[in-house]
Image (tube, rainbow, N blue to C red; front, side, top):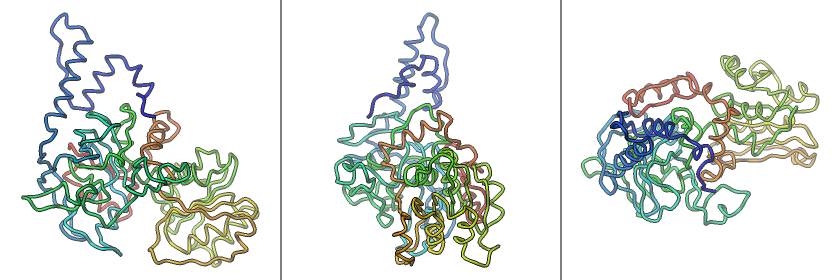
Amino acid sequence: MHHMHPRIRLLTLGSKLLLYKQTFGLPFFKPPTGLPQRSLFRSLHSQAQERMSTTAGLVIPCKAAVAWEAGKPLVIETVQVAPPQAMEVRIKVKYTSLCHTDLYFWEAKGQTPLFPRIFGHEAAGIVESVGEGVKDLEVGDHVLPVFTGECGECGHCKSEESNMCDLLRINTDRGVMLIDGKSRFSINGAPINHFLGTSTFSEYTVIHSGCLAKINPLAPLDKVCILSCGISTGLGATLNVAKPKKGSSVAVFGLGAVGLAAAEGARIAGASRIIGVDLNPSRFQEAKKFGVTEFVNPKNHNRPIQEVLVEMTNGGVDRSVECTGNTNAMISAFECVHDGWGVAVLVGVPNKDALFMTKPINLLNERTLKGTFFANYKPRTDLPSVVDMYINKKLELEKFITHRVPFSEINKAFDYMVNGEGLRCIISMED
């Protein structure tokens, strides 16, 4: 699985030099007369290795955006980041973006609040150093951190059907690393809590190696960072779980970033009708870019929206994908699919005590209701190929990126999301 990507092997030395410059920020220098390009590459390569590994084993002081209390603006602080322990990796975060999950836990709605904390989980970075026992990652590798993981050893990892790793599956309450129950972040000796095992709102972070997907180094990190969470979740819910056939109809409930990624999946699969369902009409125009062909606003109808959809599609849609987490929308998504072959996929996360009701006859009439977690992607095994879909121009990412801010202005990203402006805001760690 972990062979060098064929496109990388074919890189000319010239492109390798450029890659090193982009990756490590190495200045170009004119080689002494007569120094062949190969020697120049070796020299740059060793500079790059040194640049990253001189810090191995040392505590790195760096900037991080710390949430001191719920709902209060993050504060840029100098934090100490400890070296990685066994099976851990320390990475230099290059770009991160804000996902609704960060916002939800920052607002401390409906779960155990844990502060001070460094949020962030949708990101891309470069390996700075690796802990003991890490075999498949090395200094300089380009990686996507993921809020869930793949240990490779448990029953889930060994099953072709599951991605719900026993060791590394999402844990929103834990603020420490698994191996020793301690944090790798501190300020003046006082620990700062981790978030989702990733904590990417920091220039350096420590992550379990099973939660890092090694990707093609040609992929632009300021774009593919959004594949580490939300966009892959929606895209894969359609492509891996709903699996619409070419020419079929798909309804998508909720047209935020995840829902639009689900629509993008339906577009890629060749669906002929993609019906967007949302309470906010201002989202409809934007959604056309993602392949959505028709729009339905439940507010405009005085009967259950599933009835409207069934009527529009002569018996129901072939597939539906629910991306809101609202239980009423879940029922609508299930009840709007066609009998005999319809499949509804639930992606949105409800309150853990939420219930819904539907008549068993709906299932007996050969409708299928499925749930998915991170689109059934095994992070290390499957995410690299999603990045390759972007490189091969099959998947479009630019349209998801509506804002960019420097790290010093990270709170602006929160403002955009709170106000419902845009889809993804890229935070550049080096600006």
